[in-house]
Image 1 (cartoon, rainbow, N blue to C red):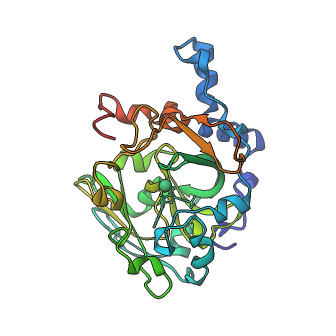
Image 2: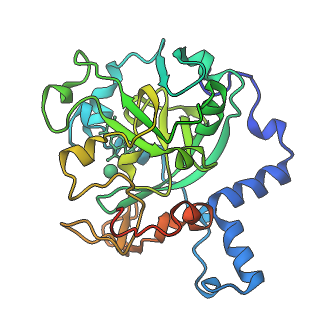
Image 3: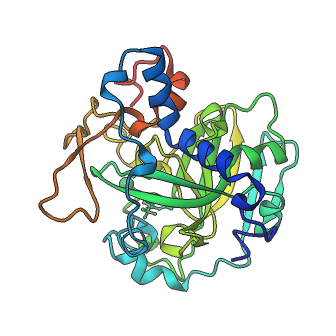
Length: 306
Ligand SMILES: Nc1nc2c(c(=O)[nH]1)N[C@H]1C(S)=C(S)[C@@H](COP(=O)(O)O)O[C@H]1N2
Ligand SMILES: [Mo]
């Protein structure tokens, strides 16, 4: 529990309940729908479903149907194999264009981190989705603490490579370490979390303990697990899926029902746990978080920058 509640206080203890819930609705995207209705903006007629009202997937579903190739490529492999990974102590090397580079222990990273509860829809590029109640803090909080230098434009992330406990890294399915990256403004967006828990429990190894990225408007593979390195750079970093297949996986990877994966459609998704005969759902632009993030891509051709 120490990874989540290092202060001993829950976020809901320090924020009045009304503010807490209003903020939560805003962050989940409902604030957007209401605003559009009042102002009569286009799109108000077809309001996106309220993401906070989506029923979260069960703890069991969230922790047994995973992608974590270091532990195997099957959906059940991570839950089966990740238990042996030692996540305490854990150190994250933070470097590149920052004022205070160094090896930061988890206690240090969590010092003063305002842990929040966020219910996010999570959309995999394989066209399935889940709704996950995360505990975590904004990546911007950590970046502010280490001090981003003016020349920094991107943030690069790497996962641990632990051959003794990760059977998957002996195979070349991807180039290890697993790498991901964000543009600095994407990294600083309030929706971008470093997650430390699920359902108020410490994050399980198969979901990326002790610290994993969550970027809800992008396909799941951007949300890199078990982070050991964060580097601020001035040029776009390499990312594992883009390196392995640039035609199928771009750097941006924003959820976009209009840009299909070369081998399948991205227009709809299957909610995990809905049962075999459940209707597929229509995928929403930016996974339903457009009000919060569309401005980041103003003027960009998202078919080109997929
Ligand atoms: N290090 C690492 N991070 C990773 C992956 C991985 O294989 N290795 N898989 C990604 C993919 S494809 C998805 S869909 C999500 C799955 O997260 P979950 O298992 O917590 O639902 O993790 C992402 N982060
Ligand atoms: Mo994924």
